[in-house]
Length: 127
Image (cartoon, rainbow, N blue to C red; front, side, top):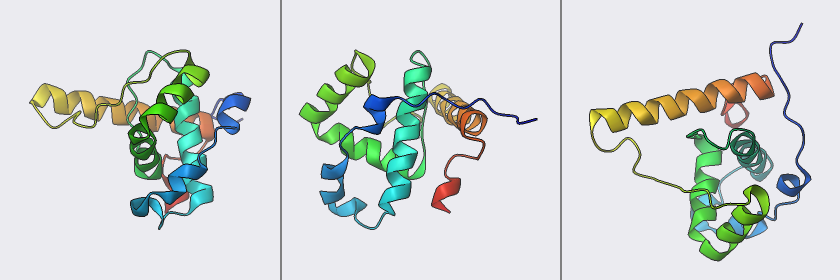
C-alpha cells in the first residue's frame, strides 16, 4: 500500500511557459528539467491548498523568485492558474521569533505535502 495521494495533473500548470526564466543569469546553472518539475509541483500544491502558506525550497524557490520579478507575466499567470494573485513575501522568517516560527511551519507544511503527494522529499530531485 502506498503512503501518498497523487495530485491530479493540471493542464494549465503543465503548459505554463517558463522558458523566459532560463534567461535569468542566476538560474542558468540549474538543471532545467528538474527545476521546472519542482516549480510546477509547487504551483500544483499551491492550487490544491490555496489557503495554506507554503514555502518551497531549492529550485522551486529560485524559479518562484524569478517568476515574481517578471511582474506582468506573474500577475497574468496567477490569474490564469489560480483566479487570483499569489503573494510572495521573501522576508518571511527574517523578523521576530513568531515570524521565524511561521516560516518554519510553512516550510514543514510544504515538505510534508510534497512528500505526501509526490512520494519523495521536496528537493530530492535536486540532489
